[in-house]
Every structure is written in C-alpha cells, then in structure tokens.
Image (tube, rainbow, N blue to C red; front, side):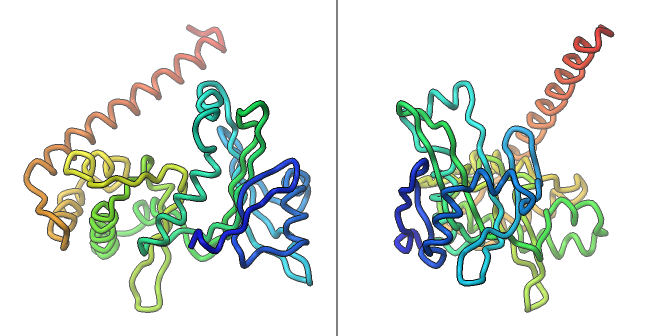
Amino acid sequence: MADDARAFDLPPYKGALAAPYDTPEFRSALRNIRTWMDGTAASVLHDERNKIVAGRIPGGSGFAVDAVVKDFRIQGVQKLKSLVQASKAAKAWRGAFSLQDRGFATPAPIAYLERRRRGFVAECIFIAARVSDAREIRDLFRIRGDPDLRALLSPLAVLLRRFHDAGLVHRDLSDGNIFVRDNAGGGFEFLFLDTNRIRLRRRVGAFRRARNLVRLGIPSGLRPFFLDQYTAAPGLFRIGRSFGHWYHWGKRMFAGRLRFKKALRLRKIARILKIQ
C-alpha cells in the first residue's frame, strides 16, 4: 500500500520509494538513475514518445532489483500543465496503488522520481518490478483459435466489469496495456500497465464503460460474446441495452479516428519525401 512508501529526496530528484526497496545503495542508484539508463546494464524496450528500459538496478548487499524504468518525456502543453498538476510519474505511482488497493494486479511499483525547474517538471521517471512471465494480451488475440479465446475473454469481461464497478477507468485500455499470464489454477491473471492513465470515479456509467472498452482489439466475431459476458457478470447495477449501442458506436468512431491518423501520417511522410 502507499502507506508503506518512503519519501525520496536526494538531489536532483524528489519522489517516493516503496519500503521493501529502501536501502542506502538503492537510493544511491536511483539518484544516478540516468547514468544507469544510458549504460550497458539497461536494455531499451521502447524509445518513442517516452523511453522505457529494463534491467537490474543494484540494491546493495549483493542483490539487484529487476525493474522496468519509464522515462516520461514532457513537452509542449504537458509541460505547462505540470506547473499545476502532478507529474506523469506521480500519477503512475498513485494509479498503481489505486489498482492494488482494489484488488487488481499491476507490476509492483518501486519508486517514482521527478525533477522540477521553476515549478515545471523537467524530468519524471516511474519504476516498477519487471514481470517476465506475462505477455501482452494482443499476442493471444492474434494466435488463439476461437474456443481458446472464449476461455480468455470470459474472465477478462468479468474482471473489467468489476474494474468499472470499483470506480476505475483506464484512459488507454488497449491491448498493449493489459498483460496476461497463466495462474496456478489453470486460468488467467491479468495485469494493468500504463498506470498514469488510471482515473478514479464515483460512478462509471454505461456510456463511459462502453467508451472505455473500445480500444481492446477483440476480434469482431467475438465482440458479441465479450459484451454478453460483461453484461451478465455480477455488478453493482444493471447494464441495459444502451451499453451495446454505445460500444458499437464508440468502436466505429475509434476505428475512424485510427484511419484518419494513419492518413495524416502518410500525408506527412509524403510531404517530407516531396512526393505530394
């Protein structure tokens, strides 16, 4: 729980550190996290809008912490917003504990660090435990046949019904932000990533629920099954017919936005290459 966190205040960073990792050596490693990220001990997993690396961070007394480190790149409007808002790293930290406190799985939060300049966020970094025995749910969407996929979609739908009933909304509930692994009972365990996008609501209505689910790349032929499993799952209130209508409308709108963004990128590339 967040109550087990310790404040982190070692220049140039401030933030928080989970108590089990609070050793002088690990604090020193976090203070020099940028050097570690640029060194040979870290492997780059992603380097576009944000940079994500993984590796073992020295923790002292002969042990190291197997971690994933996300370096949020703050630019433009986001930089202006950071003057009055929590950093993305702080939001990721709080979002991870919001999930854990409500019984949902996410890679264990280890620390978040931020550096501000004149009140604006100049750097912010979120660190979580590395999960090596799980993979993105999109991999299973692609390779499993229909019978197997139904066995996956049913518990996912029930979990997401409970997720929304708990007042949770993930603002990027996409295939890349849900990891899945087999559990000891022969079923599945789902883990939520990108926790800076977790939001808490007093109540999540049918429209917001439907809109929240449209980013999932469920094969079109299995969407009715998924929606049936979601609506039939035990919940705090009845989900009416409007839910399915909102979902299908939102799915069409989302697909249209993706096509539009793809077209924009193609036009931009064409302009750069001077072929348009």
